[in-house]
Amino acid sequence: MRPEPDEIGLDFRARGNAAPYCAAGWSTPEPDETWTIGTESVLVLPALSRPASYVMVLTFRPLVVPGTLPAQRLRVVVNDVQIAEFAIGAPCVRACLIPWAAVTLHGEASLRIAFHLPDAARPSDLGLGGDSRMLGLAFTSVRLSPAREPAFPSLEPPPADPALAARAQALPLHDLMLQFESLGQNCEFGLVQRQCGAEPLGLLRFSSTPLPFLLDALEARFEGMGRKETITARLSSNGREYMVEDGRFGFLYHAWVAAGEMTADEVALREARRVPFLVRKLLEDLETAEKIFVFKGMAAMPEEEVFPLAMAIRRYGPNTLLFVTLADAEHAGGTVEEHLPGFLIGYVDRFAPADQASDLELDQWVQVCREAYRLQLAAGRAAVSADA
Image (cartoon, rainbow, N blue to C red; front, side):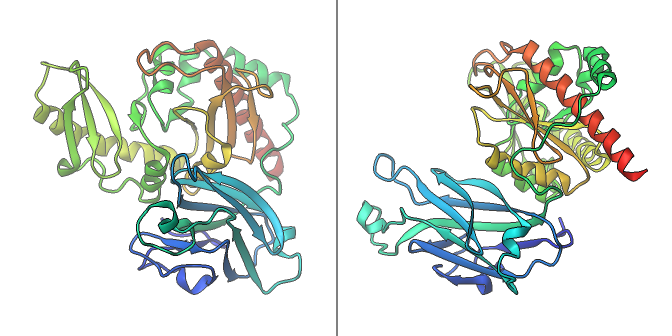
């Protein structure tokens, strides 16, 4: 997708564009990434001209060794203002907000972003070969985009409107579930819809969609998905049904064809006809921005990891992401919080077990959907009022 106005995108691959902005503490770019060197690595970017807070999305992988160096600690400092702190234990995507006050703190003509990595280490000291560089993180990309709100992660909830609450509560379950579309990470929400009597067509409704793969697919507008040469059908591990593997982005999804009903080649041919239609439908839904898109992890995930997905779908239109995660001491099951506009977080007490996918917290999922729908109605009314 083409960059939005006032957006900066850095590609740290050897043929990318990041090298001129790497001021200190960086290795020579490699085919797929650039490593940080030492305990501080600095980017110097052009000054941001639009007065706004900016969301910065970082894609990287850490130097880690199980049991010895389980994670890399990272502090992100912009113009001498610390804006985030993470522990990175695996390849991932993280997001943080750069307040406009930090951008303009000293009236800089440029933006200085420092990554502090106190756990940087030499692979040679960790038994990982002869590399003696002091490595921390291998960056793939950095993207800055203007955000619409000055605060992250939370906003004040919109004022309660009894009429909107009543409307959300009165909507029949079947109709409620049609207001949502699943983006994965597995098929649990698709089964929630099924248990509520709704069977909407959806490209990713019953798919395994690891977040990095999903972000890549959204960036590429799912181009190439569904071609005959990229589809492989095979029996599941229990031998009872066919699974379909997408070789373009790495998704794996249910074909809903039992063993013996069709051959693997017949399933693959059917998917080559069906998937391109579902790709077009998803792109249309993203551009129309009328549905609430749902994503849940396989386990609890930090919101900073999922927020880039909210940003990615808003590049298509004013979409809303409902990220569903596990309840905790501060967040009861069945509740929803609004973070940045277009980013809702819902909570359920537990996810369905992998071997009993239909054993889910249906009542809490329904509560989450009704509350998310109410917040969507409230946001739409606020937008109309602002435009009036």
